[in-house]
Image (cartoon, rainbow, N blue to C red; front, side, top):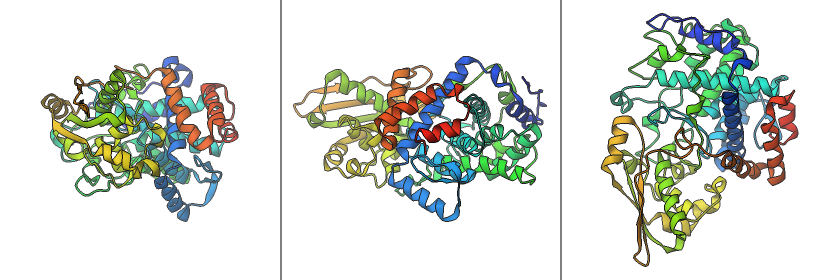
Length: 475
C-alpha cells in the first residue's frame, strides 16, 4: 500500500498526498467492511439512477445533452445508446439524483454533507464502459473516492455564520469523481494531481442560497451533482490530452476550500489516519425520495401511521413541528416541479399517507392527483424550539408530527433527531435490497431488476463489469 506523507502545517503538500493515496493505495488493504459498504452504495446509486431515468426532467436533460454530445461507448442508464465519458457521467449523475433518493454523508453530529454516490459512481461507470474494468477494481476506485470526498468536505466545513451566507453542498464532489474515474483509467500520482487541478477549478460556484427558495420552481440541478461528475471526468480527460491543470488545488490559504466559500479549513482531516481510519461508515442511505433534512419528520409521520393504522382518508389535519428555516422553505403545498415536491413537507407527507410506491412519488399521476393535493392542503407547520436549536447550533434537522383525524382523535410523535439510514439507525440489508428492486424495476422490470441485484451482489468476481452491466440491461 502507498501511505501519504504528512503535509506541512499550513496545508501545503495536501494535493500530492491525496493523489498518492488515490492512485497508489492497494485495494486489497481496504477492510472487508469498507468494501462491503462501497458495494452497497454502488447498488443504491445505480438503482436510484434507473428510477430517475424515467422522469420527464431527466428526459429533458438527456435531450439537451445529446444536442452537444456525440454517441459514445459509455452507457446511459435507462437508454440503449451511449455517450462519451464526460457526457455520460453528467447524465447518469443527474439520473441518480433525479428523485432525491440517492445517498448522503453525515458527520458525528448528523449534519448532512452532500450526496457523493451520484457523482462518484456515475464517473466510475464511464470508465468501465470505456475499457475493461474488473468489478473488484471498480469497488476499490469507488471506496477510495468516497474516502477522499468525505474527508475533504469535513475539512472545509464553514462556521454557522458563513454557512448562512455561502454554501455549496456538493461542489467539492468533483474531486471524488476525478479520483474514481482517474483510478480506473490507471493514472499515476502525478497524473492524478494534475487531473484534480482541473476538477477543482471546474467545480461550479457555491449555490445553496440560490436554489430559488423565494421564487419557485427550484433549480433543476438542485445539488449540482451532475456538474461535479462532469468536472471530475473532464479533468481526467484533459490531463490525458496533455494539458496542464491547476497546481496543488487543495493546498494552502487559497486552496479549493477557499474557492468554494468556506471560512475554515482543517487540513489534518484530509490525511490523518488516511488508509487506516475509514469514513465510509458515515455515508447514509435514504428510505424516502426527498431532501435528507426532511427525513426525521417523515419518519415521525410514518411511525404514527403504522402504529395507529391510520388511513389517508381519515386524516383531517397534519401539523409539522420543525425548525424555522425548514418551515419557511419546505412548506410549499402546491409544488410546480418534482424538485419542488422533493422539498415539500405537504407533498411528501401526503404521498406517505397514501402509501404510494416511493419510486413513483413524482410521476405525472401523483403530481396532478386531486386526492394528494387535497391532503397536502391539510398540512401546516409550526416552529419547534428544540428543533430550531439543533438546526441553528449544529445544522442538525429534527422534527415531530401531530395528526388529527376527522373523528377528533389526535396523535403526536416525539421529536425525531436521528434520521433512518444514518450511522445511528442504519437500514437493514433487506430494506436496501427492496429499495433497489423497487427503483430498478421502473426501467428494467421485476425479473431483470432481480438479475441485476444478483450481479452487483457478486460484483467483485466480475472480470469485465461494463460488459456484464450491459448484458443485464444497465443502459
